[in-house]
Image 1 (cartoon, rainbow, N blue to C red):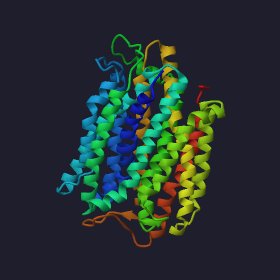
Image 2: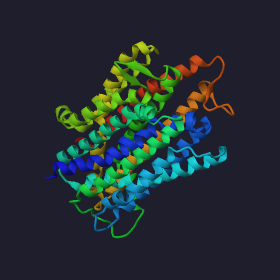
Image 3: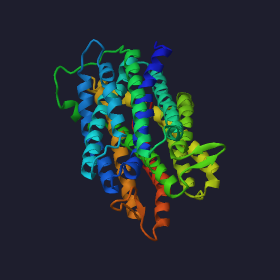
Length: 445
């Protein structure tokens, strides 16, 4: 029976990865690179796409490598222990704006982003796989997964809520503010990842293949539950990716950038904070909701329907700061659905890993869980790239010498509508596809 201390330790891993590094990369990076760092919309779209798609290829390889690791710290924990400091350091450097020319800044951004994707994979794939060897009890897996999501969303809440206040406290230029925040959050992420590595235990021994083989990779594509769940995972990250990355552009071009609501400064990060705290609470009740629904699959469907309906309704809210209360209300309701299905996804990956072990006779837990981070990166890569491309088609473009993109004459309404739809209608369409795929998912647990 796992202790509360170990569950908290496991939660710290995703508090660092999901609540700090990935949260900032998802919500702030596209806007940071186009409006502060100085990359063009096209360069930013390419950066989001190339770097993350490159890492999509490395994820399965990392999963296979992690499965074969043997050390005094176990199979998966050493990757967290020794990857913690590189993770925090590279993240900090990515939010630093060097005094270089356009070519130098482009090289800096692309090189560090590729490095960030590699080190994130080296830490996060083993972290996800760790769930498969800490316990063989299905209910306890759900609890660990729930703690993981609560940790991620709780830290995400702190990160996003504090962002505008940290900027005002630090002062100076926007570039200076982001650099100091990056260094601070990078150090915190490194400490949390180290703590996760030392506070967790590996109780189960993976059934290892005798030697490296491509057979586990081939077996994946014969694994019907894995195929459907991976596609579902891509959709969940499309859904989140569009909303998080579009929020900054929505506040910049549809709203006045900052709104004072009930005495609270609401910018794009604080706006999404309301969703974070809701996801944290919903993640905590996800196991009970699943018991009420009767299965993980049914609970996932109910959660997906919440996301679909509320996303469609959001599009019809007027682009007026006086309706901020309504916007926040629908972000909160949508986040109930997200908070319920997020821990379910990782628990279902554990079911798929068990299914694969039973069918094939050897463990491919790391490889199976790597598809979770693979879908995360694939979904966010495509959504991040598409956001800048869609805004470009709507009339937002880069002018040489300008510090940020400008709107073409006569395209103001087009850009505003596109930014609003990227936060609402497009995620709604993604949720329709997600619901179809989860309906076809064959494991009935």
